[in-house]
Amino acid sequence: MNRQLLFALACATLFGGCQRSAITVPTSPPGEWHQIDLNQARKVDILFMVDNSPGTVAKQNQLKAQFPQLIKILDDFGKMNPAWYHLGVVTSDLGAGQFTIGGGECHPGGDGGQLQAIGAAAQAGCLAPTGGVNFIDYNQLEPDASGNPSSNLPPGQDLSTTFDCMASVGSAGCGFEMPLESVYAALHNPPPANHDFLRPDALLAVMWLTDEDDCSAPPDTDLFDAAHTEYGPLLSYRCTRYGVECGNPPALMPEGDSGGPLSGCQSAPNPNGMGPGKLYDISRYINFFSKPASQGGIKTDPNDVILLDISAPDMPVASLLVDPNAKPPGPYMQCPADMADSCTVVLQHSCIAPTDDAFFGDPAVRLRQVVRSVKSNQSTSICDTSYQSALQSLGGLLTANLAADGPKSCIALADPAHPQCEVRDFTQNADGTTSVIGLPECGAGIAEPCWKIVSDSSCPTRLVIDRSTPIAPNTAVQASCLIATAS
Image (cartoon, rainbow, N blue to C red):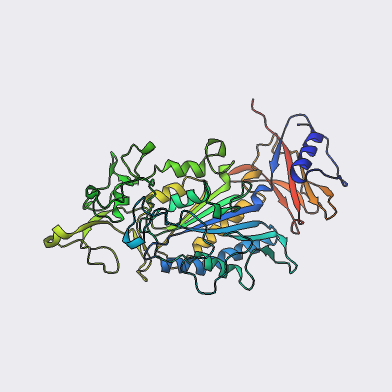
């Protein structure tokens, strides 16, 4: 591309026109120049999916207790690499199809993937985010008069408290959890209450907190109909029975004792509703997160998606018969032989915390299959009595993707030993003009900011910008490099 044309396009794209300041434009050698967008990853939308089914309060409390760990990581990183964050919360409750169950615990639609401005179990006095949106807007790029990130936090309520109010979703939600479909509903065809949360030019991070596997099913399913006794008792094992298959060749989970842990367990396929599973085919979610937008994905570049879960390990997977009236702490116990006629089949927990039996979970086969489908992913056990490492993992993945050596800057240089790149800072001034400063290649005696090429395990040649001071407000970066052309 012509270098003058590239400059003009950059100005038009970034600020609608630029006024040149002092800049030295190097002579462009012949070849194919590739423009690199280093600005997209400076926005991040973080969605927390919090299980609000019975028995989840202790886990919710641990997530809220460790949330400040995440904010500390982002604030420390933001001193030199400021970014603009949206933080929202949805629940796992989408009801149980068309059926009302448990006196209304499950009702059609449930929470519908709607962002929770104030959770159902929030303390009295909790205030919602301001500005007419149901999420936290936290902008390090535009500090307030005190030098703190600008935000829509309600007066007198700090960031951690506001998140606590949002994530206190309680445990009165439907016991047929649909964590995957809830996130899909929140992002794919978002309800009006979710307006402005998802930005097309932002990284997307999703963290699931759930102690059972996904039971996402179409709204017209009969899986939750108590009249269909051939599906077994109306318990959450129906989700496993018709959502997971194991063995070789694969077969649906048994309606009875599995005789111990099963092998090769994965999501039961259900393409186009043809079975053998009865839940949504897992490709619905894998494609949404891992495919580019041109193929139905949520992002133009799937590398802009980060998925994490706090859930139970996806193995061992085993079913057994238990006495439905005996619910002691710890793992389920085999039903006595003399009570066989009154026993029911359940999914055995895949983990239980040895020091606190409030922290337990069932194997998250479907959920973890989706999480692992993207490049940036992390799974943490819900049976850990501290979720510090989980929130630190989220912070680490976010900062790694926000850094100048994120996925956007991986390039195939024409000559890696002698890189030819042009990098500029475009700063929009208060008077409406735009200053343009060319950044030199780093080297001996070269002052920062400057650019350099580094190598890591995921990319042999990555463009990095070194800065000794934070990037100026209202500044965008434009870069282009001479790249290798296909022979």
